[in-house]
Image (cartoon, rainbow, N blue to C red; front, top):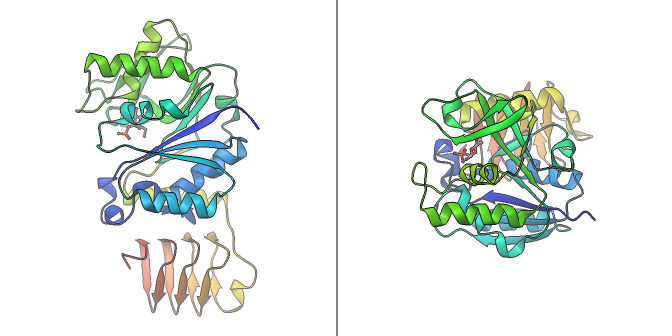
Length: 310
Ligand code: G1P
């Protein structure tokens, strides 16, 4: 067992994904056959990390139930963030549960590549990627390959290199001390205590944070981006459980979870269906079907369906 603790902040509501987030937290929204949180925890498992601290708030029961039923072997700790005061505060709340090295993966961050170089590179590290709309993100400025500044959602970004939401710290105590400095100073951006500001504090203290380019990062901020992410992931991971093609027409690529029941359906291309869904007489393409969704006589394209919205 490795000594890293994973911290997954997942307290946010995800207003840009309404109505899907009216009944569940953003991290439980499905893409490519499983909740975003499932993709995150699969990454955590592939890194061999056993201890995970979840920062929960909005609709926390859904997260706790999912983690306990689907990932029972993880050593899961749940810490509540009572009010949405920002990512910096969310991470600081994990302080009592974390010592030694830690790896942070934001609850809406899907990385479909190898995170080992970032996490186990033997240095503090942060995942970055060039984006078209840098003012929506935390931004790093590089000089000779080294980070010389961090800024959260700047109006005039100094670069187009966004912080993707994956961070690795060799010494979590250093991080918590930097967060404490930000909290004490009263500094906020957009009314929230920012993790990015703690990174600036670390930089000012002479602590190096190594940038790691991550091109396999998928944003899930809006329904449109969610469907796009679904298509991109299905191009890489096509999966149909044995026997499903007997009573249905499946047009690849699709990702259908084990145990999904389907009868007399035409599914695909680009359809993902999560666990315990049941479909009869449906024709779907370019669609995401969430867990435990029941659909009958449904013809739809370019849409997200879940047990509350169908
Ligand atoms: C957070 C971070 C930001 C980062 C982004 C990645 O912002 O504060 O630095 O670039 O995640 O998605 P949020 O998306 O919570 O506004």
